[in-house]
Length: 410
Image (cartoon, rainbow, N blue to C red):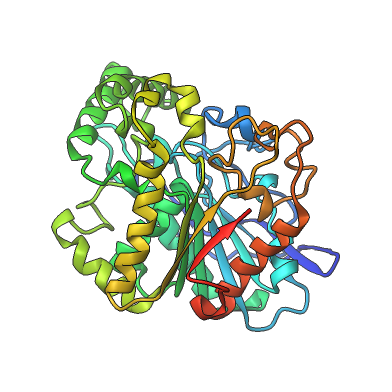
């Protein structure tokens, strides 16, 4: 394998962990012959521009898009040997984003915390979570992509100096919601040992079966008789956008994330069994869960009708995060919570959704187009060091390594 080596780190980019036909569960990628070039980023799942790019800056930044997008990238200290592994699941409401984004450059975490970081990309939107009628697998194949990536980590990460027996899965927004869903999935049991849930919109709830049925019907209507297996990628993206637009006035909060994983469909248990699966997960997995002070601010800006709902941040993000930590501890597990409160003086949206990301990933240059950081695009280096220390020490040692069970940043 040809990799990049720079400043004491090894990077292997765009490694394929699975292959899949459209709307079907992926299979492991066969072993390659010869020398694999792992110096170039892999493709992103086809998508429309992120709805939050106006505050984060473009997330794909020149990445090609392809339905064959099951790739991951590894960043590790050059002398890694048995180090903790951190597996990153990006956000984007299950319809946008990529682990290959330069904004998610894991070098700061790997270097600061002496960890091996794996950035995972997975299928999104109608390609990964809610397919039109007539598709072989209609639900949740993007979640099974994530499980397949974790199996790849189990089987291969030791070659990069990572310890497959010490894996932390962490994700933000839809990525954080994915982490919670993976803790419910029996197939993912034993594949990771700690979890960090960042700004997951847990208050949206999981009872979305009726919305999913209606969304699938809207997808079919938008395709107007075109076989989803024969449709072009663009036709599917257009149908996805039409279905999402239809959902907005019908299910206002649910339409914030209409392509989310659905309970009762592989690999997730039915709603009645969730409590038992959570109890099982709490016995095995240590948890850090939190949110930002003004998580909902961007969504209120984009949807002024949300302003009529009092304290949307607390309802969707804050209270459910604190409740999950409390539930984890009540079940005999080990959990801590955090709240990110920092924002620059001229930040347009306060301590908003995504604002913690530049303190974990990427260079200041990568985030120079992020309006959420204010006019000076300032990233407080002391706070960045503090957060990277907490995240990576949790990966090394769990809750016992944290300075408190309830953390505040900023």
